[in-house]
Image: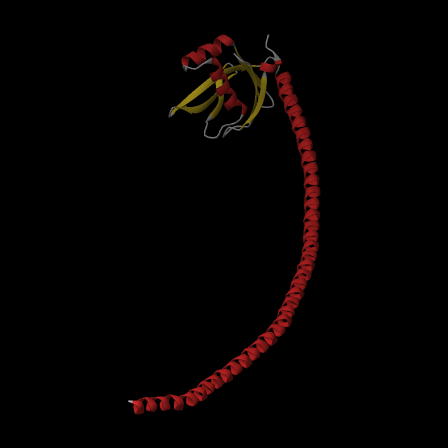
Amino acid sequence: METSSTTRHTCLKLEIPGTEPIFVKGTWFDTHFDLSVTDGLHAWVCDATEEEVKDRAAQWDQPVTEYIELAERYLGFQQPGSVYRFVDAGDDHKRLSWTFEREGTKLEWRWKLRPSPDSRKVTAGILDFLMDANIRLSEEVVRKTQSFDKLKMEAEKCLEQSERFSNDKIEFESEIYAKFLGVLNSKKAKLRELRDQLSKRETTGRAPMEEEEESTDKTQSYHSGSDAEESEEEPAKNLTSTSRNAPAGRGRGRKTARHE
């Protein structure tokens, strides 16, 4: 007995050129599948047994699982590029076929369907499945819409918070910059004041030094003048003493000569 975890259901509205659309419902298992087809008035069924699926897969050199997956893909959704046909096969039977490409070669799979003993029941089952699927889709759309609206509200809140944070940041930075400029300007003013005070002190200290240097120069000049006068007097004195001693010397010389 197949478990529900391995059972999958599909329902395809198959549009074939030149004919009215048909609905193909598939029930897929791991090793076999069932098909139900209706045009709204008549219905046909196909029970692909495990032995039949195994033989078909062997003909195409495929594993059973791969064969079923490929059939489910083409009968679960109408594939673009594939040619679908639903034609008479005699004795009120129908043949459902579709084409696909494999390694560059176009191939065709066909399955024969027999008339359903209870077309109304099969058609009602397909319609019930479509209604249930439509309800599930509607509920999913409602959930997605609610989720989207919730996300939208959260996004708007986040945007509002972001704008508020941005404004607070700008205001905070403006206040900080204003305070910083005030502190910076006060520091600059203090530095200018200190620089002016330093300049005044240097100027005030320079004046006494210049006066002291001038007095020192004057003193040196005075001493230099006195020394010059003394030096002038000394040669005069020396000259006087020399002149005084000179005649005595000369007399002595003469006396010496006379004595000889």
